[in-house]
Image (cartoon, rainbow, N blue to C red; front, side, top):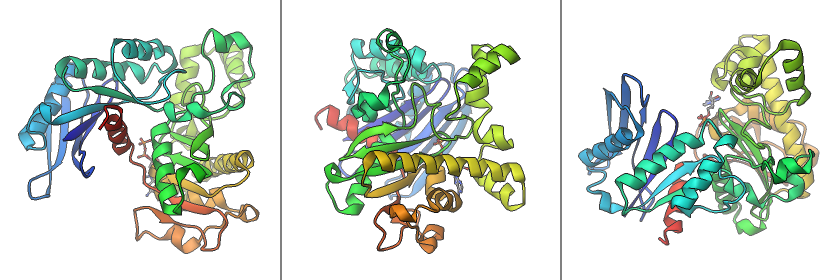
Length: 401
Ligand code: ADP
């Protein structure tokens, strides 16, 4: 049997098809530029002889319905999916589940309405997810659609961590609290880390650092999240590609009063023009590291602020946890940037965090690896994330597979 994972955005749908007996991804790809004059369909798959094949097409994709139709037709044409009846479940990534969803759930009208009700909390993400869910349910009524929320893993945070120090009614009437995101990734790398440590997850205290274009940290005690860096929205916390992370909220008041920026302009400024891009004009860490090597001072500053903020969170979460078994780096930057890992961990020897410089710099392995010294009290691990696989597994579990 197979599980299809859909990550449906406002104008694109990423997909991955897994064989559920061995969890091999037998096909993946995306449809992009939905609603534009020219759309794009990409498919990569393993053929019968286990060779990688790929196909790319430019064609109009007016709606999400056509997008999903094209995905299924391409999967069938490639032989990756003989028939929709092979699907045990469709797993949908949903960024914001609001305050109620603690676990993946099979979608019904009530679940869809609840996701709709938190659209104001995730206006960039939830509408696209809903479009994909609605189409999948309509096209494939016999295949259960399961939603897996980025927020769910963080639902174990205590109120002291998830409440803001603002008037009570903003929480009770407007659901303004910290939710946290990237939960599927934090949960996945935490469970992989437990395997590497050779301990049950329930006995592991971990600090997980998901560092991609979006970035977040989580403090995990006994396998459960007790704090995370993102808040009401994915803007709070670490420095990101185009998002500022933590700032004094009075900056917004200042921008409103003195620069006349309205809410929309403030949103654009902090979500799309800040972070690495705002500091040095580039949002791609690979390019920034190259510029810094060439002596570009703004690129160097961008790296400095990023590492400084990371170290602050490592220290804060260490204090919250009291004892830490491992720090885990994941995401494009966490998995690949030797320099960011080095700078985030520098000077933390007294906390038992000591990198093995050679292991950290080694490009030999791209897989799960330990980059701390052998006798280090805290293990520092690099664990490639795989959110799609985790969504597929959780979707199958939700349908009782
Ligand atoms: P997304 O959040 O969009 O999934 P990724 O997890 O793919 O993003 O991370 C993208 C980031 O990872 C980019 O800033 C990219 O420059 C960075 N990255 C990828 N490879 C490397 C590398 N070899 N060295 C440094 N940064 C890298």
